[in-house]
Amino acid sequence: MMADQPELHRGLMNVYMDNTESSFIDGDIGKLLYRGYDIHDLAEKSTFEEIVYLVLYGELPNHAQLEELDGYLRANRRIPDEIITVIDAVQSAHPMDVLQTAMIGLAAFDEESEDNSKEANIRKALRLTAKAPTIVTAHHRVRSGLEPVAPNPDLNHAGNFLFMLFNEIPDDETVSLMDVDFILHAEHGVNASSFAARVSASTNSTLHAAVSGAVGALKGPAHGGAAEEVMKMSIEIGNPENAEEYARKKLDNRERIMGFGHRVYRAEDPRARHLRERSQALGEKRGDPRWFQILTHLSEDVMAPYRDRGIYVNVDFYAGSIYHLLGIPSDLFIPIFALGRVPGWSAQCIEQYENNILLRPRLHYVGPMDREYVPIDER
Image (cartoon, rainbow, N blue to C red; front, side, top):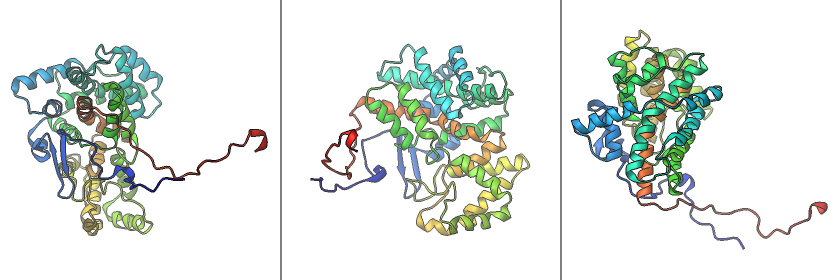
């Protein structure tokens, strides 16, 4: 006899699985806090290094604490030659697959890999944060037939990423832009990739395994791929005057307009504001404002009537145009998201380890019951 139908929460929608101190989201009013601090203050006044400290330690650092953390990050950017060899061997794979492979591979070279104490996991989180950009840039250069660029200890986290990617010192404005992008992606509650990380952590697996699992979850287009898809959409539209016709055809066919809507927010994603302003400024600086104009026409004119349904632009809507204008290949858009999120994934795992319970939801069985087995010769 089949069990009664339980109440289902498909997608675990609005299911609270635990307490957290990492971040707070109010999707109805578009509010996001990291450890109690408003994302608008952090995006405008802070640096990614400060955010790394805040997310992992729970407080904003003083000068001495920030200097120590920054020095630790700079000292741990290099990756072993063996990892470069692995990257070379799998260079034809998607950058997210390479990042996931290399991240779990780093466990073999980390003496604290199996130590799940909070102190060890914070150190591992910092090392993974420091090394992730080296993995992404090394892979891109190897697949392009170029030598990887060694980390530059004179540059901050964002500046070093751009330097290793392009082999030239970036200007301060571009570094600041990338720094803000990393800040905006640093932490965002128990989304799909953070949940994947916490599931791994709940089994008492290692931080390397949990974070690499999060990378795998982020790769999916329903989670981390929106920035790339928005840029593809913008290129397909081509010019601002084509935006309305493009959108109408999509909507008439009940197809999704990329970059709109969010699982949590029913108001504008608070992170989108900071990328919108910077997308406009960068487009004007580079003499190529059409991408911003296309996106603005879509958001402010075509899609405005849908705001009553809680459909606003999300953080990915303007991100793709920024990366494109910086000359970053589209398949690196998701890895950039991952580079910013490593501290947040790590913080989620550390919380899970501290008050752990195995994450093991149930499925309600609706298939046939008590079937008679038929030997293979009688089938």
